[in-house]
Length: 573
Ligand code: DGT
Ligand code: CA
Ligand code: ZN
Image (cartoon, rainbow, N blue to C red; front, side):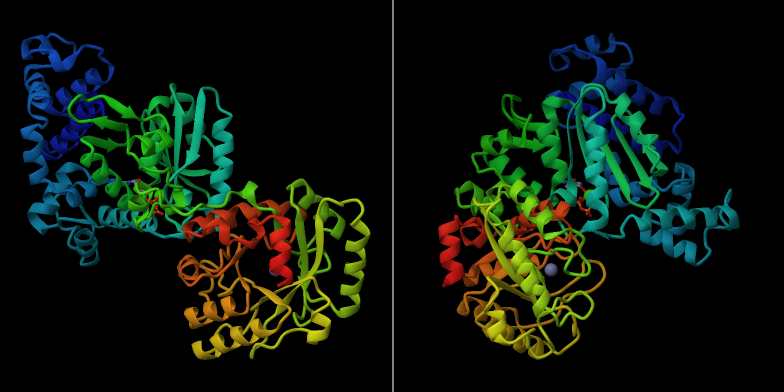
């Protein structure tokens, strides 16, 4: 952090803690710190070189604050702040952020009820210990209970499928605002976690005001939790909290890196920075001795300055990625543009899908694919299944499109249903007519693990099966995946030369990350598939790509990354 920025941060903290200490925001001392903070933000004077008496000549800076500024530049810390930090631990300071809880009440809660954190406060409310306090009462107690509930609900995690579309829309809308140089969602969403607590947006702009204005007044906002000069927090009508931060374009990379996390990854990176004699924070990578900013504008710059490979956001979980990046040993990850085909898509012949064969093929052609497998459901799936006769018709339609799409290999495939004991649709003779079969589970989710393992292995032994579709059949936020012996299934898949699907559906993202990582160790191959049920959804394969990153899947192991010849070899093998 440029030391100026850090100084401003420290003064902000001082103001916050002093407000607590003084029992209110309007005392002389608190206001003095507020004024000083504002002065520090705007001044262009070379503070680090100025004496106390020179500093006091600046507008908004009194003697006591001038001394603290000097102390900071001389020693790197401010003693008074350290005292206040010791007096008010972070858990207690958090309480000051509960709406309706002022410093006076807080101190009373601490001194009379020994409330030190949120849990204590909850307990005190539950025991109705707050209402007898001076200045309180049953009504204020109830109000507090509600305010805490709000905070509590922030901890609810939601499936990525609920948050990602909103985040993508927000990014689009903010990008179109005047003065916005870059915008990205950060946090767990950018790391592509399966569940999300809130959406964190980072914006690069020199003028925050229009962005804050737009943000607070969006139609989808039900409540503004906070609004500052460069930071706001809102709750949408659907109850998703969105935090927005506007930063200087020069610091965009550092801010994006910081707010993308994970926290554990950030801590690991900071350790690496320290080893190199630098500090890393949301403002930049700064050489300690010279205070020179080594990198801050882009994430790429920062990783490079740290002497390591760029680490894709889904990898940033402190699972060994920092050490690997430093040794140039990260897996080669696949990019959406690298994929040469899609091996699991449906047409309107599957009852739950909407596009014609021709529309799906045209969409695949627009993706630039060299091969495509159309895989409508087998007939065992009661509502959406397709019988032999209809499948013959699909085959004809596909063949008829051949001449028009001569640069794309069109495969007539099928998504077979794995029955309770591993049985599949049709006879093996009939199945062998398909160019490619995906086999997946759509029912009997509650069998014993041994039975599930057996079932999957039995299905994969059918020679026609080449891909194990959405392996655990989970639905994120709704249904846990089946329990099975993962290792045994993966071993069997390897033995049978069956690829493990990486299903791109946002409610699926199946097989899950832990399974993918295990499969990498065991040596399986993978197929990243859209499982699109509409021609417009072929592009959702990008989600599977990011899920594959979370699983550390090297692109060399992805069958639809392979060039046509190699892919055909695998298919025929
Ligand atoms: P979530 O919101 O629970 O789904 O997960 P995240 O990772 O989005 O967490 P969040 O929203 O609390 O914070 C966003 C990022 O900001 C987080 O991944 C790392 C960074 N961050 C937040 N607080 C801290 C902190 O105290 N220390 C460090 N080093 N980084 C933090
Ligand atoms: Ca977050
Ligand atoms: Zn499907």
